[in-house]
Amino acid sequence: MASASTCKFHPTQYKPLQPSKRVLPYISCTAQPSQSNIKVIINGAAKEIGRAAVVAVTNARGMEIAGAVDSHLVGQDIGKVCGMEEPLEIPILNDITMVLGSISQLKASSVVVDFTDASTVYENVKQATAFGMKTVVYVPRINMETVSALSAFCEKATMGCLVAPTLSIGSILLQQAAISATFHYNNVEIVESKATAGDLPSQDAIQIANNITNLGQMYNREDASTDILARGQVVGEDGVRVHSLVLPGLPSSTTVHFSRPGEVYTLKHDITNVHSLMPGLLLAIRKVVRLKNLVYGLEKFL
Image (cartoon, rainbow, N blue to C red; front, top):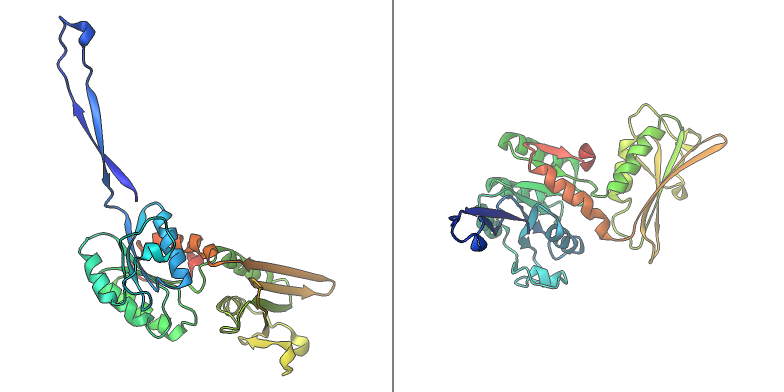
């Protein structure tokens, strides 16, 4: 935790008759906890990404964990759950309203990080807003209707919210490079790999496909109308195809292949563990405290 120093000047009287025993003035400083730290509440704290977030926030300057919410491991100290050397003396609670009410009394800048699911995120943001808190949302498969509703709500409440389809800075850089490449290539296919068969295509693959759609380009014209399943799933209306490879032991990987006659341009990004998302999360927390509306996409701040 960051600290501030309070210093006092202590003058002393100079006695000319005893120069050898002169005592010089001195300054004493006392360290006090800083009140400027961002208070962070993790909703979904018992999940793998939630545990990683607790450790990252605890070790980051200018912010601290103030609450942990989850329906699992209720009552356990979140520090111990995360394998930290010392407990944080913050129990996991399953009542987010209780946590928000307690933290709001501190009258400090507070951010709720939502790792829950698409069915609860709207109500979670509303509750955080009611207590005067900003929200960072990283929820797989959140639909654009929910984002639009949240945007209208945050605009009316003048409250900041950052909805991040991805927290990976590397993934965002890949997407930006892909957008630049679309103006020079007529063919593009996305190949992703995952260790487990979750929601496919992944959110990252869908985001890339959406970003390079409606840029005035029609891709893969040679077989744009084919319905052969082996050719992958078409995402969007511009012929972008996505292939998902699932094999245990594979890292989470996204590769975008662009081509034209005589040339292939390949962009690739791998995620080996959830800790790669933490720099993006810390950036999101620092940026959302200044927002007064909803922003979609962490790339707005890179």
